[in-house]
Length: 133
Image (cartoon, rainbow, N blue to C red; front, side):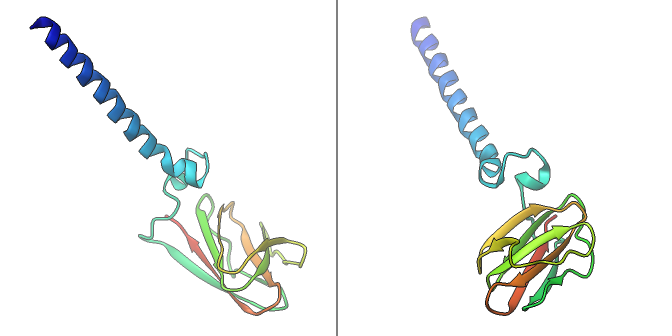
């Protein structure tokens, strides 16, 4: 009887360890998907509760956000046209050699109190920026 109990406790401990491992992996999954940062913003990159959004109309000339994006927040950017963009601490001007963001592609970055500027690649459109909470 004692031998059966030992086997039971061993099996129970093994199952508990496996369940704990699965829970740990599930908890770490957002970090694997969105980056390795341990900040709360990167673990849950965009809670749509209390979010703020801004739009930038894109044309042949550089267009920027009217104000700086909130420092330390994850910013989600998606544009309905292919653009070249840059961020800077003061009045950026995007040029055709800046980072390319294809149409309808989501880009994430952490703001350092920067402004966002973009210029079209070939067609006018809009960039939608969401400051994640």
